[in-house]
Image (cartoon, rainbow, N blue to C red; front, side):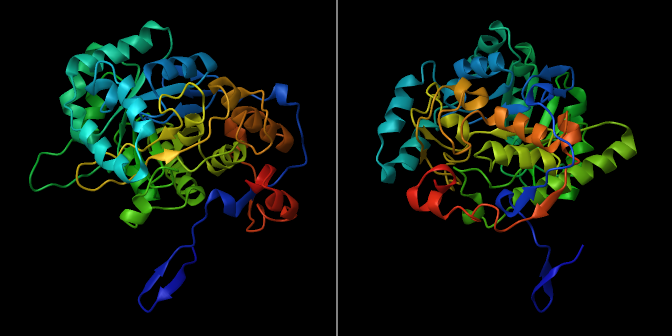
Length: 387
């Protein structure tokens, strides 16, 4: 692939985000009612190709249950406030009232409270008892320590998640998690990530993971790209992971799910993620706008509360509607931020594709003018695509 010369002795590939590309309609169209947007991973089938991001301001046991009822799956952060405090609701109220210059420091104090192992199993069982698929997230550093409680509580899906997760972590001070050994020995399907390159995705797939999360720093609350200077725009990162999935399938006969994690705010973004190669998406910020979201109009990333180097910000959002309205409608706004999966269904129908896997074959174009062409009135008035 052609590279651009950055300077003498240094060159790099051109990478693209969702705003840089457009989906090209084909010669065929369909009725939206005839489109199937369901998603399967391991033994589980979901009506929506959706994972709710493991952010405390987005996923509580209650919102995870509601997401399951609506056809997706919510990922509970097992290292968050829900496993550090018996009743974290007063803390969420305090976080929502903190002035901007005090928020991160106070949240670091809140998250310094030790994780209570009994709460890990209790939260998982709350979700399972509601009759929906239970899914929860841990970082590689705490995976082994929490594994016993996770297994005992009979979690359905486990996510091992960090800013960047590699199949080969090297440390001179501690014994790192042997990801391949852990994934193959635990009797729970495991999703791992994030990653943002072909090689990293391929190596994570070779651990035996059921799925990989693709995305380093694209989230609305994430500051990793500014703090650490790392990341790859999502359209390119997903396409590279799709290529890794094809090679892994050729090598093993096993299909590993690619899950786009972050950077999507509208139904159009979700559609583009699928076309680039994602089987499903993980979103957080759009769900933070739900009336049921525990963050009370705020959300923050998993790394915001890091004791020495926060890589996220507490972000304020606007409450737009119920979780159901945001995911499956009806939409009361015309900016693409409501009825996200109705938009996906309509995008697929408009382009003539019947299933998510078929939609991955759709043509795309590099389209820098896509978001601005002919939109001067909307932008000047702050409506529609002018937000």
